[in-house]
Image (cartoon, rainbow, N blue to C red):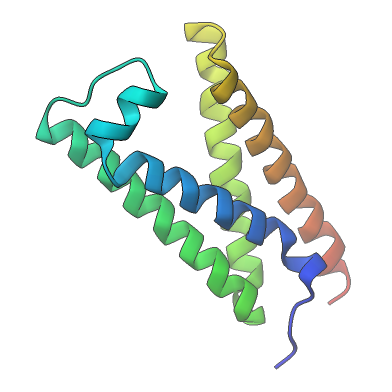
Length: 132
């Protein structure tokens, strides 16, 4: 089985690191961490549940991207899911920009980062699927 190069996996690696960090921020202790970062309180079990579910979803995708780095036969699927994940987040944030106004610097930077990672993943597909 052929191993993927670091250059081929860099989009998955960066996305995994960022998404794991975001997952832990959202889900480890939502009632403690989120009020410090954002302008709202997590006061109900239902809201904590939502953020822990988001954490689980983020961790599942990040795990799939790590597996895609380690198993070349899953690289293409992992990359397409990374493009959709990052592109979907960016799309939602751009919609919010139009409907809700300009977000904080943290979320604006997140939008730019998600767009960059989605486009980077797409470029990786164009480069590495052409070689096969």
